[in-house]
Image (cartoon, rainbow over all chains, first blue to last red):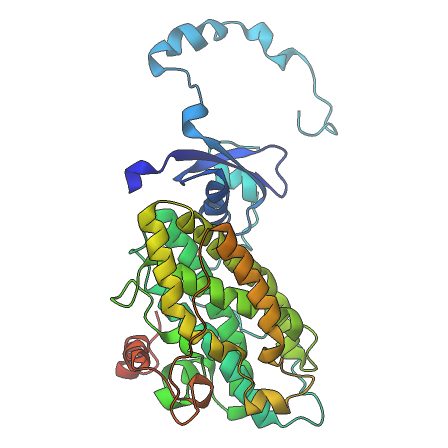
Amino acid sequence: MSTSWPLWEVFVRGKRGLNHVHVGSLHAPDAEMALRNARDVYTRRNEGVSIWVVPAAAITASSPDEKDPFFAPAGDKVYRHPTFYSIPEDVPHL
Amino acid sequence: MSFDNAYESLLGHEDSHWAFGTGFSEALSGVNREFPVGVDREDIVAYCLMLGDDALIFSQRLSEWCSRAPELEEDIALANIALDLLGQARMLLTRAGEVLGKSEDDLAYLRDERDFRNVHLAEIDCGPGPGGDFGTTIARLLVFSSWRLALFSRLRGSADPVLAAVAEKGLKELAYHRDHAAQWTVRLGDGTDESHRRMQAGLERVWPFVDELFATHAVEARLTGVAVDPASLKSEVDGVLEAVLAAGGLSRPADTRAARVAGMAGRDGVHTEAMGFLLAEMQHLHRSLPGAVW
């Protein structure tokens, strides 16, 4: 039976979190049950106020083989990082 | 915000959500424990044992699914429900124990079968033993949680502050239990031929024990304003069950009534043969090693 239930990726937004964070995955027969299972598996300790579930099959992921062509070219372009600006201390979430 | 550990970013650095070790708080801390005036305390004790034993015994039954549920996720869901009910049982047994001079553990582990006041529906074997399967367990959960949710929604107005507080806290839990059971009832009923057959068989198995849920006991009749008369819940619960069964394409079993002994059942301490085995498993560690902690 385990093999017949599709895999779902679970994202939870915490009380103080600003965005949903990937916390793990689970098996469920459909989206409604996936939400309920996520509630039981990933928010048992009052971590979340909002849950998203996404069919794992719906996620298109970059391949580890393409890591270099994908990410390495950004490595030596330091001017893309905002390190040359001073950030005011009272600006949160930057 | 660090994303190395998802939980770190969710919880921040606050650890008050976590229970460390075994030093759990008292079940009734922070609750007003005064008894309402003009009410027999023995009746309140008896009523707390009724509702507390329902939760304790059904919790024990649900926990039998640990590591045996059809899926890991369902395993956790049933264990969560069992723990919610155990929490309700702790508060109610603590309340009864305050008058009896006993602890919640004394009442859970050292009473004999005749002293338990739970309804038969809570104690019968609905699986994973030979008495049923997952569908039967869901059928019992649907009936039990629909009934207890209706009961607790009225119990919130009880003149006894502890019963009112227990009901208030339990209401959200029971709403989730009923939702979980209803979700599964509809899926199994509306699923394959095999799942439909087993869900229907599960309903047939538990239905003879439904009648007892709505029978008014003398204790409940005396506790006007404190207890809920279960007979008053019948039409509401019937409506809920019929809606769920209809959504799952299931038929309501014929109303039959499990046999009583001289008119007595679980509320009088008269139990089915399954009860002795259940208690033996639940109590044997505490009785073999008195005062054992983990």
